[in-house]
Amino acid sequence: MKPTHLLSLAMIASLTWFTNLPASAQTRTADGMQGMNWANPTDNGNGLAWPSGMTGNESYEQAVALGQKIGNAVKAAGGRTVRMPITSQLATGVNWWRYAGAVNGVTSTGLKVVLCWWPPPNTGHKVADLTAWYVMWDSVNASYANTMSVRYEPINEPADYNATDLNNLYAGFLSRYHPPANKCILDGTGYATSVVSVGNDSRLSNQLLGLHSYHWYWGSTSSWQTDYNAMANAVGSYAWRTVVTEIGVQTDGRNVPFWQQWEANEPADVALLNGGLAWARNNSVATIAWSGINDADSYHWFYASSNLTEVNPAVCNMFRWSWALTNTVVGGTYRWLNRADGKYLDNLGATADGATVGQWTGGTSSNQKWNVTALDSVWYKLQCVSSGKCLDGLGNTANGSPIAQWSSGGSYNQQWAFEATDSGYYRLINRATGQCLDTGGQTGNGTGMQNWPPGSSYNQQWIPGQ
Image (cartoon, rainbow, N blue to C red; front, top):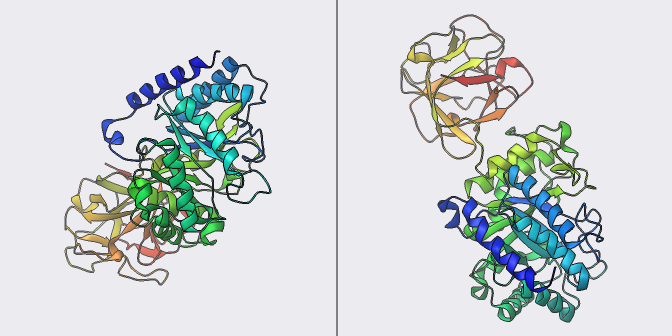
C-alpha cells in the first residue's frame, strides 16, 4: 500500500468507533477506553517489539488482517481499546508500514489503539535520547494526528523523573504536537503509580492521565479494601481524567476464584483485582488489562494470539463487571434460598429491632421477601418487605452469634457483599464483621441464622429468586 493511503485508512477508522458507543460514554473524558494490552512476549521496549503473533515479515494486508482478528476478539470480550507498544525501530521504514497495518486493522473494527513508548533496555525509565524519541513520535503523528482512534502515551512508567522534570517533558511533547483534548495519556509519577502531580499541572489539563495498578507497587496485602483505598489515593481528585492502562496479576489464573470475592483475607492477586476493579467501577474509570494478548505471560486474557479463548472467564468477568457490562445481584425484591437445606431466609414475622432472623419452608409470605438496594458496586442492604427492618449482623464477631433485623440506618452492620461461588449462589458477607450469613447446619423451620467465617459449606450459600 502506498504511504498516502495510511492516513486515510486511519481517518476512516476514527469515524467508526463512536458509532459503537452509547451517547453517555462519549461525554466522559476517558470515553470507552476499557480493553487490554497486546504486548511483545519478551519486552515491549526491546527494539522491534512486535506484539504477540506478529513476526515482522507480514505484508501490510496480512498485518491488517491480524489486527482485525485481535480487535474483533477484544470487542467480543467487551473491550473497546487495544494498547500496543511503539519503539523507534517499529516506527521506521517498512517496519512502520507493517506495524501501522496492525494498528489500522484494530481501528477498522471500531476499537481504539493506545500507542505507548517503552524506554529501550538499559536506558532507565526515562527518555535517554530526546532526538530519537521525537523522530519516532513525528512519524507516528504524521499518520495519526487527525484521528482520535489512535491515542498517544508518550512514555511508560517514567520512574526516573521527578514530578517537575516529568511535567516539563510532557509540556514539551504537547507544545510540539498540539494534540486535541484527550488525545494523550500521560503516565503518572513513579511507575505510573500516582497521577496527582501530573494532574495538578495546568499545562497538561486537557489530556488524560495514566495509572498502573499492581500489588507489588502498592504493597502486597490480603485486603481488597486496602487496594481499593490505594487506588483512590493514587488518583486523588482526577478520576474523571484517569485511565488505568495496566492492572493485572502474576498468577496463572485458571484455578483462582477472582470473581466477586470479598473476604477479609485473600491472596494478594485476588485482593488487587477485586479492590482495584471495584474502585474503577465505582468511579467510572476505564481499565486496560495486563496481560491481554501476550503469549508468554503466566496469566493472560487469551491463551495465545492464535487461540483467542479466555483462560479464566471468571477473571474476565471481573473486568467486565468493572466496565459495567455485567452485574452480580441487581436491585430488586428477592427471596433467598439456602443451598444446604432448601429453606428460605425469613424474618419469622417479627417486627422488633434485634429480633433474630431465621429460615422457613418456601411460601408466599412477605416475611421471605427482601428488598435489595445497592449502596455501591460492592455493598448492599437487604430490607424485609413485611417488617421494613434490615438484615443486621449486630456487630457480632463470635462464630455462631445471631443475625437479626434492625431499623434501616447507615451502620456497616446492615451492609452485605455478595461473594460469588458457583451456579448462581452467593455468600453474604457482613461489612462490619467479615462474617457470613449461615444456617449453622440447622434444618428446622424457625431456626435462627448465625454469623460464621467464610468457608466452603453450603450452609452459607444462597441464591436469589422471585
